[in-house]
Length: 133
Image (cartoon, rainbow, N blue to C red; front, side, top):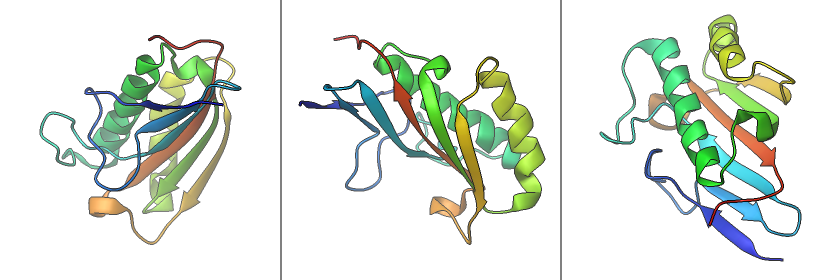
């Protein structure tokens, strides 16, 4: 089994000892690290509240998936962490625009706090048959 590190310049650089995503070549299982609404160009959390953060978070996930030659249709599990469960409906509405058919299994949890004071963090697992080289 080969462990392939997937990294996109169109998503924020990691801020700690972890990769944006790791692909297991044995089963083409791609584990994406949690993403928050950091603008990859500025390196800062976007302004505009839960809507802007959720949109940027999903854009970051989309960029990482694209590095593997995949899209949201490859996601089989998503985990959403919210600083405030009152934001659940807003996040759900934005999330539904990306996962339009056969959405993945999912969990949403309220947490005490998130990195950089983010309002939402999303991590996911994707599977596929190939990756671009």
